[in-house]
Length: 74
Image 1: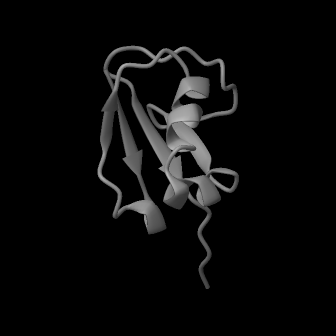
Image 2: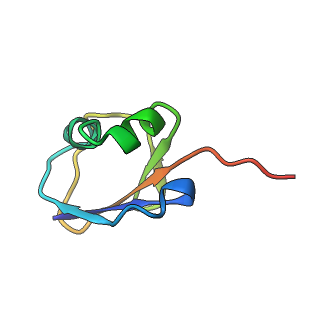
Image 3: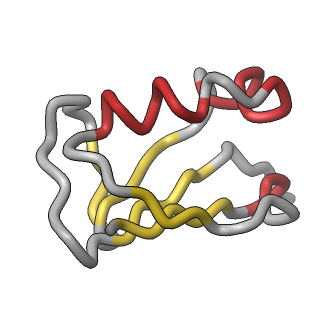
């Protein structure tokens, strides 16, 4: 199982525990949620605190994936 955490303006979403093999599968699952779908094109993704760019990246049992929305500050 991997754990998916939602940060920033998405932190109201409950963490997910999923049995998936890569980020491509995660994207397919998250796109089914209309609230998340509008954010996904803007978000970065990290796997175990490292930014992930490859949707084919293999996920292992115990990995933590974070969905990182853009932020602004002053």
